[in-house]
Length: 325
Image 1 (cartoon, rainbow, N blue to C red):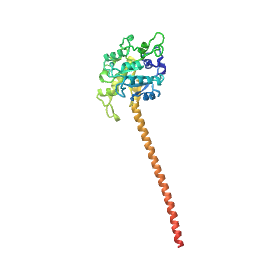
Image 2 (image 1 turned 60 degrees about the vertical axis):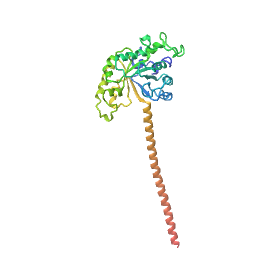
Image 3 (image 1 turned 180 degrees about the horizontal axis):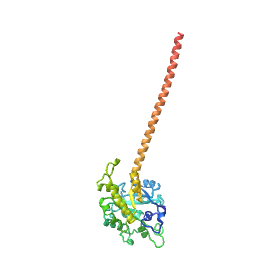
C-alpha cells in the first residue's frame, strides 16, 4: 500500500486504486494481484502497533463484533496508529454496524481507507451506505468536519484537488454479503454507483443457507455455499467489483476460488495468540518431558554405577577381613 498512501497520513490511502476499483490512470500491472490483511480483535493501540508493522496491506478494525472499540476515542487511536506506525504501508479498514452508526464519522475523519457495511441485502441498503461515506461533491451526505484536518499541515492536496475530493476518490465502500437474499440480489447491489468492494460474510451466509458454520472432516455437503460463491464471483467479474473475504480456516480445496478474491484476511490476532500460546506450551511441555526422562535415565545410571561400586568395594573389604581371621 505504500504506493497508494495519501500526501498526509491523516488522510486515507487510495484503497480504491489499490484494488482496482478506481484505475486513476494506473496501469493494471502496477497494482498488486492480492491485498492481504488481518483482523484486529484486541482493540488496543499496543496490538495495533504490532500488527501494523508485520507487512499486511490492511488491518480490519471491527466496530461491530470482534474486539469492538468501546468509544470513538479508541477507534480514532486505532486507525491513526495503523496509518502512522506503518508509515502508510498498511491502511485501516473499519466495519461499522450500519449507515447510521455513531462510529462512522469518527472512522472516516480518522483516515480509514475503507468502510465495511454488514448485512447488505438490497440495492437500497447499498445506496444508503454510499451516501454516508461520500461528500456532497459526489452526491453523498457526509458532513465536513472543520477540525479533522488542518489547512497546510495535515490537509494536503494536489492542485485542483481538496481533502474532500481525495477522500471521495480514495475511500472504499465495502458491502458485506452474508445472506441468501444478498446473494440473490448481488447483481443489483454491484450496480450501485459508489460500491467499490463486495465482502463475503462466510459464517452468516452459511447459516442462512442452513449449513453449519463449522464442518470438520467435510461431513456436511456444502454445495449450496460453493454455488453461492460461484454466483458472487461471476458478478464480481461481470461488473468489475473486487471481492474481499476472511480466510481464517480455508483448506487446500478452497485455493482455486480464492484466486478470484482481491482482498484476503489471513488471520485475526486473537486466534493467532491462541495458536501461538498453545504451540509454545505444548513444545515446552514436550521439551521438559524429554528432559525429565533424560534426567531420570542419567540418575538411574549414576545410582547403578555408585551402588555397584559401593557393593563391590564393601564385598572385597569384607572377604579380605574374613581371610585375615
